Image (cartoon, rainbow, N blue to C red; front, side, top):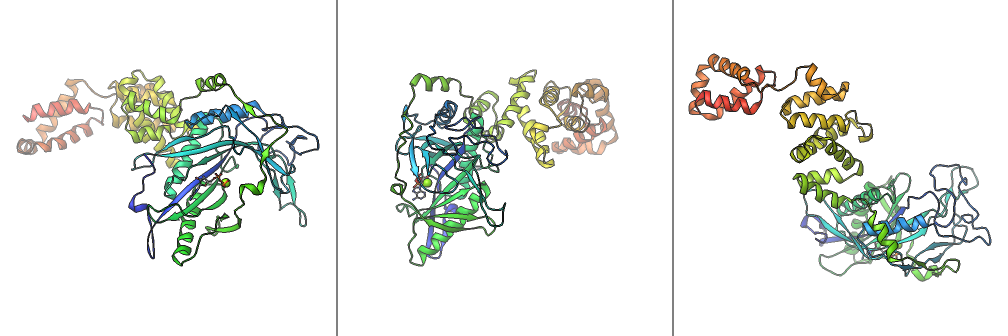
Length: 494
Ligand code: ADP
Ligand code: MG
């Protein structure tokens, strides 16, 4: 189950193959109304410094008070990552100077984080799923933001983000390609969204990645890593990894050594650039924050949070496969976003016979509805066809009222004009003809009009397909294909 290394993932250098090794530190903003240690709002997009308490501005003598909801969110996330929850954790001061950090330190967790080791199962199309180890998850404060573009000679500081709770989720160096790293972040984001612990919105900065990259000869010990800071899109992350791996290979093949350093990704040029040499932990003079007691949780508290955890994508996927015999790939598509899974479940909930038609419903949700939404750039939330309407269409196919082919016309009508699918079928006369007499007449007419073909079919039974086509055409697609097939075989003597 570990990250598979396939020959195609190795990078060809001038002197042979190289393997890239990737570990990610994800900063995920905790979904909560107020900040980690103050009551100020976390709302996005307020006027600069509109959401700043005296604690966030680090006024002398202000004391931090832990926000219980942020703790609960971190524990939920840990449980969702199948991770060890540490009943005792400690907040430390990480000391550094930066103009957007009025305290002169960040309250973080260092040696005793709230969450320990866990795992994330990642799926890649056309590959086996693999597991990425989670090293730890800790809670920490975000810093403020410097605004350089507001005044010709001054820089302004906006402390709205100062003190907002972040979860830093540190992976093990378990990824071996940009594709794997992208798939991991995508999966992690899905889990966070299911849990409701982070909205995963990379554009608003709710999810940022520090990307650690090193290269080595296949099977050799790990090489020295460089850390690319604050990558804020999954696409850029892939570009940064590929560029960085190439850069390191170039240096090593020229006989050089990799300096451990912190780099940044320039999205315009598509390259990484050195920012500073890597600081060591001792540079930060970590020590337990004397204003905060160690955080102690009871097992009962953790168990209660666990009992109320929503069903997560992996479990949902397994259930869809088990209950409705979905293909793993299809179930994967449905659970990949919470909205997609919710839509499918809403359809299921309204089917007349979900054991019979659950799989059919999945096909319709994925191929017709999502396919159409993708093509037109629409979102599920504003889909012109509702779950109720789609369930009605699937019911009509499932109980034999309409054929799959007519159902596509019906879908088109409901998509463009709306309406109750059952009523549309009635008023437009779209019902499938299962009446044997009516179909028989059409079949007889077509055989009578084509005696030569009927003769040929006796020698070449595959020609029955041509007759089926003719009958379907002359019935306007409404004849039940199975009935037509059976009748033709008898009449043609096949
Ligand atoms: P630091 O604070 O020094 O960045 P962390 O423990 O927070 O250290 O994070 C280290 C990150 O670097 C982890 O995600 C880990 O998986 C990754 N990592 C460690 N060694 C390597 C390596 N040789 N190549 C790539 N990534 C690595
Ligand atoms: Mg780091």
